[in-house]
Figure 1 (cartoon, one colour):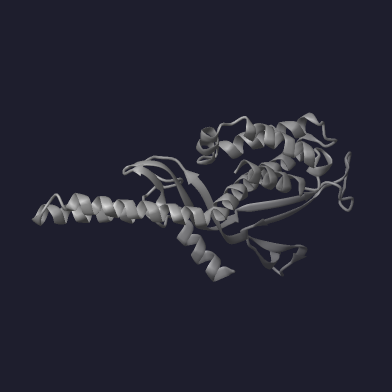
Figure 2 (spheres, rainbow, N blue to C red):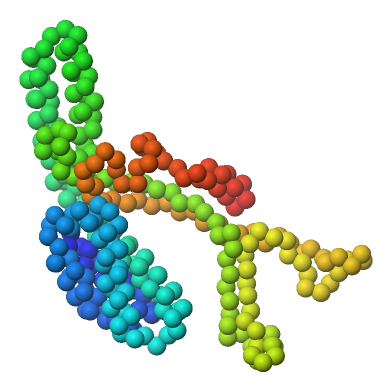
Length: 271
């Protein structure tokens, strides 16, 4: 996993054309390797089950970039570092996924062995009971074994860790999205020479800048709508022990945020 994460993070960060001029690819690889090699296997697995691994690694790489004193303003630097933060998180996630995929055959074999051992345990246990008690024990063991493919237990219910894969769909919209061209020289302005041009996307009517109706009201020329987006993906990670999984709020196999259905309806109708 360490090797996969090192290569994935290095590739993601170095693919950023701005950052690649501030910190060399070999330096990103060395910093990432230094951090991961400082962790024990247990620490690596524990941190990878939460956001901690990606957050700590991103902080280290962003500090490295700040220390290189890039020739940009503070606002532009923070914008680039936000992109770096995303690059690191993607690299960590891709590294974990690559390990999961490459070890898929091994995991299948382990799950098969565990399933067989539990079935033998169930047969031995049920043999000790009879009648209604045996039926209740059998049903309970069946429910337990149905959950086995989700993890690797030492002996139920003591779980070592779980390898989980989620599919997700993200929909959303920007209530207000603004792009400012500070180098624009078309709009004169006293004292400052020119005024930055602004492009704004939000829910509002657009009117002609100077033409008016006969009654003196502005002429409407269209409607400005917010930027909407929708995309799908998948994520894989190792989950530690506990009553709930990563991001599990309701306990259902499918969970939605509060406004998900409203946004799906809105995007489906208006897109």
